[in-house]
Image 1 (cartoon, helix red, strand yellow):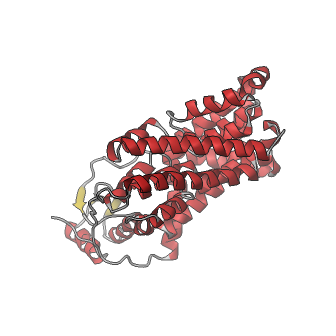
Image 2 (cartoon, helix red, strand yellow):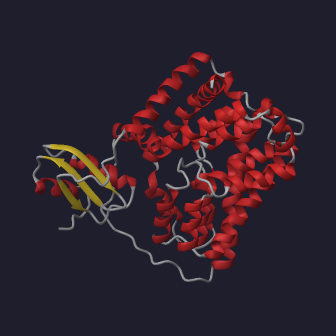
Image 3 (cartoon, one colour):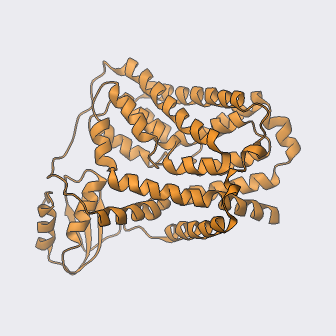
Length: 399
């Protein structure tokens, strides 16, 4: 037990400083770019949106379950199957937060190889689907028109950066990140070295095992890193570890069900086949680039930071994770007033409406749901004043 606790603590020391930096940068991307910009450039037919979908998806810190509603929205707004799938593959495979964490555990080679693999996977699958589906009927475009977004102040955007980076994102990833670190610590402490040398260093066993494990399970891009690092320490081939980092976040039973039901079984075959091919080929390239390098030699980079910084960052990260694990979301909770705003379409809409409604006297809490297109408000308020604020912001309220 002491060995397990020690390994878990060591993993936290490695991951915390880099993950905090990644969460902050993810918040900046959300606040200063946003989903509206992404949908504008990713929608529409042709191959260029496939390339844009892949490039835009790579840095976004969105897990394989959270990406599903975004992909569904892209499809509904006019994106082709190829563009939608490129985004669906490249986005959960890597992100700005997971790139930092990958560097912390495994160094620069893996931190570069992972996003490159996501790029190739998105392009490969997008091209296959584009070639086979380009004559199919385009989706029904359903968009909403609203007034031009006002320019939000720098203070508002920075506030949104911290809210998204250290509140919204951790709510989505806290459980899987903690699970990944705990599982990684357990594996590192209990797997016998002799077992690893006998099985995990054999490519005929290591690659099929990692692919078989990674495809059906749900593991986020960040949470997969500690598990791969623990297996590397015990002797797993570097290439097989990279294959797990690619296939694990990109696939799971939920995403496979979404692809089969919404985009078709043929697209599902291209999706799974492309992921497996890219994962194995990328892994083989890593094994060729790092001949004779052991896992223990790879998993050392995070320890280069000063110990005090690691401890402080770990305390901050644990506080953020546990606060968000215990946080009760207001979504679905009955509030005093509900307003149907059909032209809400993105996070920028959400931020704009929140800032407008907060100006109404008596507002205690506000929740803007993009998916439900509802504005929920708690407090003793004048309903007409809320409606007027929403309309002044450029949106319509359906009565």
